[in-house]
Length: 587
Image (tube, rainbow, N blue to C red; front, side, top):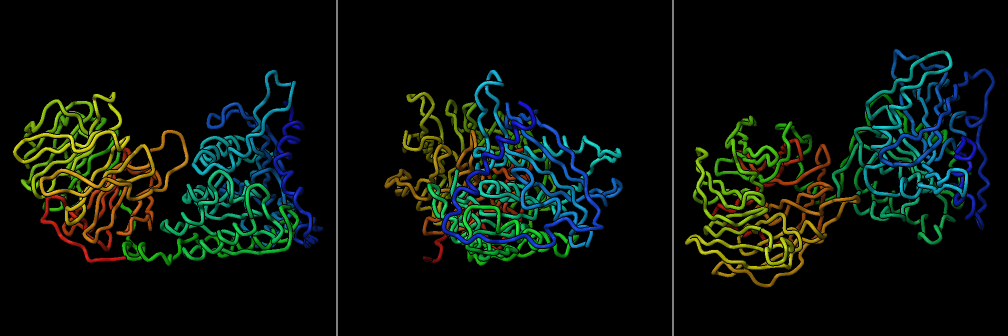
């Protein structure tokens, strides 16, 4: 497939932008900054085909790289990434604004959506990969940019042999797009605000592949350092995908609610590029205003986030380099213990934040919980036994031949843990109860498909079980003899978009009755009304388990793959080994 064929196919992805401009006036005209001006230095355009993607295998695409005349390699340039190639007279605008110092020296990378070639390549037209790449709500596209395309651009040189070098700081990077390309641009910054902090969204298609959920997520997530400019028109009704005009206004309201720097310009146009072309210079001025100052996260109006988070208190790295962390638990001093399942080791985090080895051979223990006797209880799927470790690390087998995933030990001494159902081939899961006298029984079987996290309410009247195979956290009422009744789905979690994603894993409660669930989106926090009211992402966007620790149990520890983080909050965690407490009644 040659360069012209790829260009023709990529233009097909923008056809919708001109197909729906029916009743609108849409008579916007570009101003002087969008037109070639005499005496203004012109940048150079480098064009190449990129066909080596492993993230989007089999795709080919055109990449055009605009290098301003003022660029010198001794100062890494700011970066602008535009989806669907060059639109809005962008390179002319860059020439004019850079010359007037109204935006920094910026290299533009204009990339078309991928095309999957037919086989053989010269027979029917290839298949556009645009919808999948641009509308998916995951980190595939941003990884494609950061790990594949941008390094390929930096391997190029200008005609006068200047090497291309980009700043690595988010404050120096902008990304933009139209329609699904606008969703793509926002998703890239949303997934990696450490890589892009400035977004231009034109007639955003926030109604495909889950993009309609962004306003809800924006209101619930801890605000991210993103500045965004939105443009749309009142005749952008979206056709089969819904009313994009209303969706863009809903996006703006959600962003304002959550304290983002957001600007919007509404017109009367349809799903076209005309209005965006007319306002593009002003959008660039606004996005790059006060550069080189970084874009800062704003202050949300989300009551739960404000009740939990401490201004200025962010995540701190505790340790890294682990194989696979799981099973966080805190003792009565507030020291936190966790398992590195991949290395079969258990570590202790002291009150000073230092990490030391606790057990060198933990038999691939996964879930962990301290009991009222001061011992650390750990279960494992691969080494089927329940082990209790003394404060010195000496092991005692409590129950042999029983595999488990996660565990909680109540103040009463009752031990609850999740485990496979052998009669059902290992799944769905069993819930086990081991009483202080050693009696073992299955208290539920087969209901929760992939029982992962398990926790008690602060008053220990209810048991919560997260189902990693669905969107749900289940709730059980605990009877006086420790058995369970009244099982029901309790909290519906938000789920990440991608292959092999687990909706939920570890789960804990604070003393006010809120639940904290480790998910692939971050820590989802549920109020007593069983709603996810807030989501706190972790620095590396992973979290498998969590617990409260520290001297006052007001610090949350998150196990995030190969890293462990901590963050101080306004709340105190509820410890299952402690005397039960009844939270205040809340709506």
